[in-house]
Length: 169
Image (cartoon, rainbow, N blue to C red; front, side):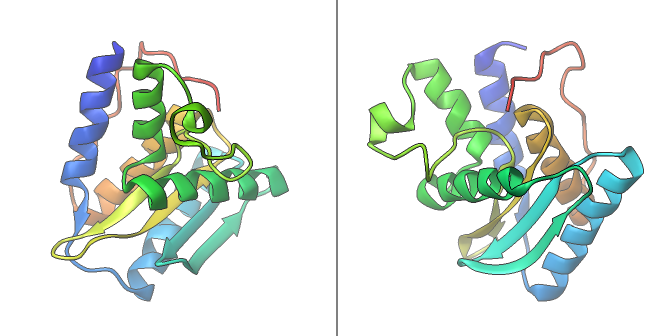
């Protein structure tokens, strides 16, 4: 898949995946959905959901390490800063050339423009937090979150072009 097509696809996901409301119950449901998906597929991932900085859900499955939690923190900081998915920001930087440090002065120790953190956008309120996973190649981290959000909203999920290569985490 070409970079422009990938960016357009991610932008369409961000536009479509708006929640009518968000609360602790929905955070729990979404987090446990992601965890169940990972367990069923044998994935070693960490999951986090935050609303306005407040931790609402966290799970670390067997095979994860503290590094996964740090990746989530850094990817989540990108969503909080740019109000877009960390994957979209990474693809955009790839297209323009450069990275978060050279273009925005953001330290790599605190920001990671790798896929896996997705904005929680509530209709009428905007971005109020994020849901993030870490443990897979970045495109797969991103798509796992998109698949779970799509299911939560009752929307059909279409996996990305299977012939496209996943970018490294």
